[in-house]
Image (tube, rainbow, N blue to C red; front, side, top):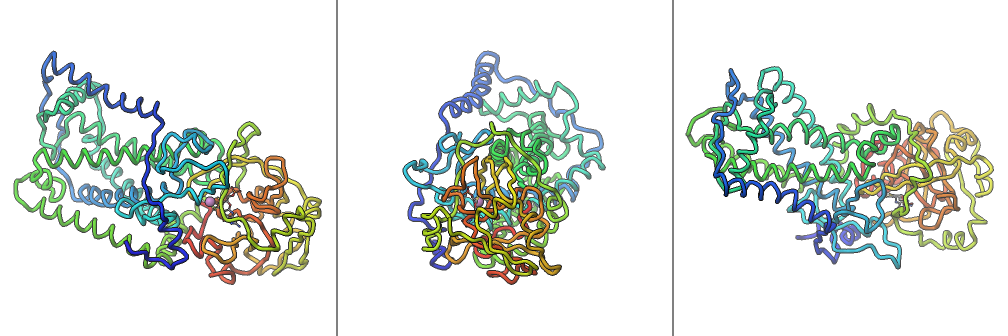
Length: 552
Ligand SMILES: Nc1nc2c(c(=O)[nH]1)N[C@H]1C(S)=C(S)[C@@H](COP(=O)(O)O)O[C@H]1N2
Ligand SMILES: [Mo]
């Protein structure tokens, strides 16, 4: 595949080592295999001794069914396309931190599954960005390596419409009585479903009711699970990865055993949807594809060719859309970023943005391993400061303020010391709990007295961005004034290490990690983020198309 990006980005997106990898914790693999194998073995034993169990046919046709109305068929097609977009963009996001953990922490080698052949080296710094893995665009959107910014736009744009479609679909399901197709109303459905399972497990097709009017027991349970269990759980576990939500409601991610528990569940649900999709398609094909396609495409219960022909066109259109999404990702990423900003961003501004971050953890929760990110500054200035333990460091605070200042580390510490134990949310997927000590930004703001037209705080770094150029980030005045927004000089009770941002780094706990700029050199108050860099609010927003409203 030809690289599509400027040469400096090619190194990031098209690494030399593109080997795929899959490793699952052996005990877990054995457990999972048994979980799948056991019912199949029991089914074979039952079949061997007693033959195929009898299946009631048709199973519980509900009165008054009129087949599949147009709204249902439309929702079916739209959610099919959106599921493809969600799964494919989700895989790109996953590849950016190709490890899944069970609890709060992301300690290397504690993962239960990884999608990389690489172990984390212990003899040198191995950042989360080093760990990001290549994934083919055949499987994912937009694919390649470290494309999480663009992948998230597709994921959130799709999920917006997916939830909307789902809400309308479920509302109409109940309004028009079609819920009785999906919602089981008798306990006997469990033994009924088992009898049908024995058929499938021993390679027999059970007798089918006319699926246009009613489903058999196992089918009904599967559809019920997809619509009423898996879809809501996907939404809830997705939300549990949000820094703004977790930062405000500490109890919420705990429901999932922490953000990583939610992330693992989110992944397992994706696997569930994918397996469902494959079995569903296989059964549509083997149980009378012509009639089935007429049901779901045309809304008729006939044997003509219209259904499968139009259905095939629908699938081709879906594939064309996937290709168009790939093309937009690489040719118009800025337009995509702005589209996501206008839609998803508007929504998050109304919902997540107003939440005041206040979640705190205990000392016992502090993560044994805290991944690091970014490239250590190479500038002579920073190297010299580091070797002198930042004795000569002065933080320049300037711009639209009445009292510009230059502060040494000692002066900053004298101005205020606040400690907080919080959860860090990296956009790539990892997280970690640490204790941070530093000067509340609100105290600095009070000291320098911004002028009324100052709306945005800019933080400059000694470090460089991923593709070169200065690493900078901005915060709104409101975010900067939040109680948990710190200019941190301490991590876990010790002076901030070189790796984690010495002499100063930002902590803004309702934000994703990329906003928390390390190796801060100066602070500037401006009227608008448009005046700085390329004008999108930060090095990551400029170069990697990360979310423009990161309070998500
Ligand atoms: N100057 C600078 N600051 C940075 C970065 C960077 O690359 N350069 N990476 C950001 C990202 S993506 C994250 S997740 C956090 C990681 O902080 P840590 O390295 O202390 O864990 O730093 C943020 N601050
Ligand atoms: Mo990050």
